[in-house]
Structures are given as C-alpha cells and as structure tokens.
Length: 203
Ligand code: APR
Ligand code: MG
Image (cartoon, rainbow, N blue to C red; front, side, top):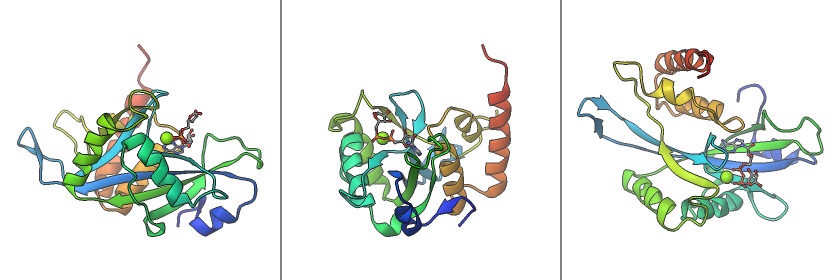
C-alpha cells in the first residue's frame, strides 16, 4: 500500500473522521474508435453538479451502515441501480486532499473498483439517465474515460487535464496502473501532457 494510504480497517479505526466511499466501475471491450483505436476498457466517471469530474458514491456514516451498504445506497441515487459492493472490492482509503486539516472533521475517502460485463455497464449508463433520482441535479451525466491516445495526442491526456474533485484524478491514475488498464509508460506520457495542457495560459 502506497504511503499515505490506509487499509479499510485502519481507516475505520481513526477517531472523529467523516467517511466517503466512491467506486470505479469498469469492463473490457473489443470496440474500436473510428475502426482504428482499440478502446480496450470502459471506465465510468461522472460530471458532477459542481462542474468537477468524480466517481459515483458519496458520504457514508459507518455508525449507521457499512461503507459498502452506504456506497450501494449512493449508487442507487446517482446511477439508478443499487449495485452490490463488497469489502473485497475496497482498494484503499486516504485522507481527502481538499478536506479540512482539523482532525475533528477530516474526511477519509474509500475507493473501490468493480469489474462488470460490458452489457452491465451499458445498463448502468441507461439507468443513470432514466431512473436515477440525482440525474440532472447532483449528477449531470456519466462519462467514459478515454484510455487511448490518438495521433493528434488527444484522449487520455486531454481527459486528465480536466478538473477533478478531491483525490479523484490520483484515484483514477493509480487504479489504471494497479488494474493494468493502461501501460505505465502510456499513463506517464499522458499525465505529462495533461500537466502541459493545464499550465497553458487561460482564455
Ligand atoms: N469522487 C467524488 N468525490 C470525492 C472523490 C471522488 N473520487 N474523492 C474524494 N471526494 C470527496 C469530495 O470532496 C466530495 O465533496 O468526497 C466528498 C463527498 O463525496 P460526494 O460524492 O460529493 O458526496 P455525496 O454524498 O454524493 O453528495 C453530497 O452534496 O451537500 C452537497 O457539496 C455537498 O458534495 C456534497 C454533496
Ligand atoms: Mg456523490
């Protein structure tokens, strides 16, 4: 486990912290973009009400419900499907980088990954616009993360240059590596290009 990261048990043992759980839903795919670029995997994120990209999930009170039951409840609101999430889907936990530094209100964010079938991912995308109560309010839409690089340098680099909530960009990058969804050299090149794009002068 990388430094600064906590196991599920360690995180739950920290006194006086708030907790939030988010999940990366993903699947393999044979689809091709423009008949050329292998898409390889579908990874779902969402455009939030605050204009930031994040993963589905939200605040959970472990004194009321388990982290996983709370995450399923959040998914039913945000995706329209109460997907079951298991303890074994927990990847890591860490203090949210943008949360208050006072120990009484520090936020610990738990991150999960769940591999699904491509048709299940399509069902989630459909439900997110048809039955999810949060659609159009807290969630403006689900988005697929482009994991490829086009000839013009578009794709993952441009996606990573957007603005993300909390530690979502790091959670995305670390999970892409850990689950071997993107090669390390490809991710590192995309992250470098994303930093250049972000450093470009404003309009
Ligand atoms: N994705 C989303 N949020 C994350 C992530 C992530 N990968 N990592 C950390 N966070 C942090 C953010 O700081 C966020 O505000 O967790 C916090 C809680 O997550 P939300 O998904 O925003 O919580 P949710 O319960 O779905 O919504 C509550 O309503 O009262 C408002 O602004 C409040 O964002 C809050 C929302
Ligand atoms: Mg949320």
